[in-house]
Image (cartoon, rainbow, N blue to C red; front, side, top):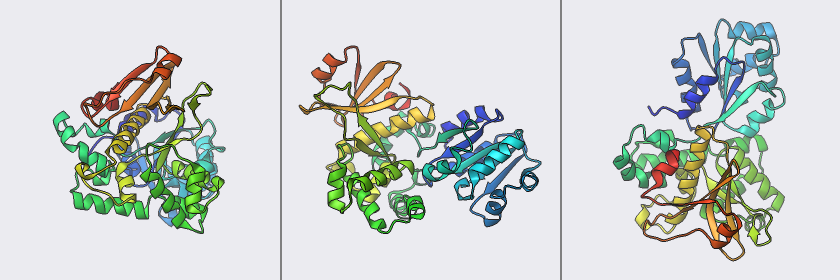
Amino acid sequence: MIKRILEKTITKELFKKKIIIIYGARQVGKTTLAKEIIKNTKKKTKYIDCDLFENRQILSSQNLSKLKKFLSPHDLIVIDEAQRVKNIGLNLKIIHDHCPEIQIIATGSSSFDLANEINEPLTGRAFDYMLPPLSLEEIKQKLDNLELMENLENLLIFGSYPDIFDENRERAEKILNSIASNYLYKDILEFERLKKPDQLLNMLQLLALQIGGEVSFSEIGGKLGLNTVTVQKYINLLEKTFVIFSLGGFSRNLRKEIRRSPKIYFWDLGIRNSLIRNFNPLNLRSDIGSLWENFCIAERMKFNLNNQRFINTYFWRNYYGQEIDYIEERGGELNAFEFKWNENKKTKIPKMFSDTYPGSNFSFINKGNFDEFLCGK
């Protein structure tokens, strides 16, 4: 088993009078992580599966004595798929306020569902953590540098969901297609009750075909027959269910800098490739540049998440076509990165950027030097 980095972070926060909330897309390993935390503690523990009706029924009660009887005499309680419990936020608040000695860990597959239930009741009472698919830093527990390079193509094509890691090509495709078809946006379909769910899939496919490019809400809406407000709503929901994430344009309000249209990326390239039904090897693809850019940015985002590095992230572009793929802003310092699959392709920082933001750092990331950047620079 690959040990998740988030386990160490969460373990340090146990029994400090905070509820722990673990968010993440379906199938990324939230249940496995929670059970690992249980396994590695000497406290009395209880795992509660909220897929079971009887568990949901008890946890949805505001009867304190009933809740205490259900949870005692345990010290650490894992409430898995907690978003399925009615009034879960209020009930967690009751448990926290009246049984402060009990440590609660709650997992949820979609933040817009679980967070809407818990944000207000649990203000100041909970720490939230997002669990992404396996990160490169975690995968390196099993692969040395040579093995990592040999598996790089697989990561770009099949991604890093735990269930597909180490699987052969045929089975990896089957699992990814199942996730994309049955789990990927199930929460949105259930809770939004979309009248035309095909529109959501069509939007995902459009986004998958233009990763690394700026997204025009009006253009997408025109292709799908949707208004701009609906397009923005769907994209927001897809972000909240951890399918995609966006980068905004970096600008200090200069007239010649573009900052309105975001760029959209996928947390997992296997899911992206499943949506467009393209698992071809890299030597047969025309989108290797976009794959590499998405891979590098997503892995860097995972690294920052796993290591609790709170950083502002952007891309940069001006009206003359000069651009930078990815920028991190932290502590007043700007670090700019350009991603090229081809190690021999020359690149340099755009002059307008270096003139406007003197002292900024610039790095060129390719398949020969990506390891340090994605695993801890």
